[in-house]
Image (tube, rainbow, N blue to C red; front, side, top):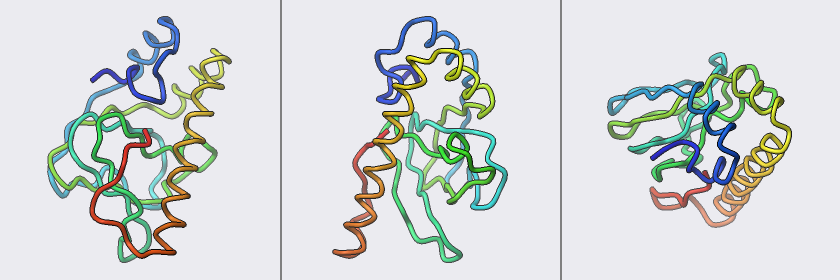
Amino acid sequence: MFVHQTDLFKGMNQAFSNKLNGITATENYNRGDFIFKVGEPAHHFFILLQGRVRIAIGEKGHTVTIANNPGEAFGWSCLVGFDSYTASAECLMPCSLARIDRDKMLSLLENDAASGMLFFKRLASTIGQRLVNTYNTLLTGPPEDKSPSYG
C-alpha cells in the first residue's frame, strides 16, 4: 500500500503525492511496542500499512479504537494543534507504519491549499466517525475487539 492511496490522500494531484512520499518514512514495530504514549510530545502522524494498533486513553488504557485496516490514520492530534498525544498507541501484533513528520506535513498542506482543504475535510470525517463510535459505546457498552476503517 502506498500512503497516497489511502482514503485521506486518494485523488490528490501527482505533485502533492510525490512530495508526500518524500516526507514519509516506513517503520516496523513488534508486538507490545508503543508507538507513542499519552502526554508524549506529538511530532508525527501515522498511517497503518500492516498490523493492528490499539489506541487507548487513561491510566488503565481504555481502548478507544483498534486500527487494523491498512490506511487507517492515527496520531492526528499533532496536526490539529495539540503539542502532545491525547492517547497511547500500542502494537497488538507486528506492524508496519508510515510515519509523517508534523511540521513537514503541515507545510505541505499549507503550500497546496486545495489538497490541504480536502485532507482536513477527510480528517474531520475520520475524527467525527470515531466520536460517533464513542457515543455508541457509551450507550451500548464496549464493542467487540474490532473496528471499521475510517482512515
